[in-house]
Image (tube, rainbow, N blue to C red):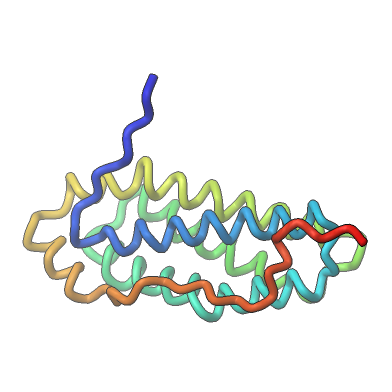
Length: 161
């Protein structure tokens, strides 16, 4: 069975593009764990991605996309946003033996959250919201492409000496 790309309403396609970057964030964290990258380097990247991208993405979704009405799908997305924020907040103070476990949990939680929004929530909202509502949302969303220009490419395979 061929998997076809999801056709997204043009007014919220930017949020889907952000989701792609978020999935890359998860992959990079997993690669860092796999390559035994020191925790501080991974945590610095998490803080960079949160402050530069994810935090603003959550605000846009909650302020513009989720504001039209509340149902169980929107409640779930907001709860997942809160869980991700909490995992990020806990990360720097986690005891050393549990840090990779928490990083893995963060990567898995973000991954599952993005999949939920793309496969369930966004199609649901595209049906529930009118074309006019989606157009208004589209004008409110920052249309700058997300650029992950983090300088420490810890996720690349280390060179053996």
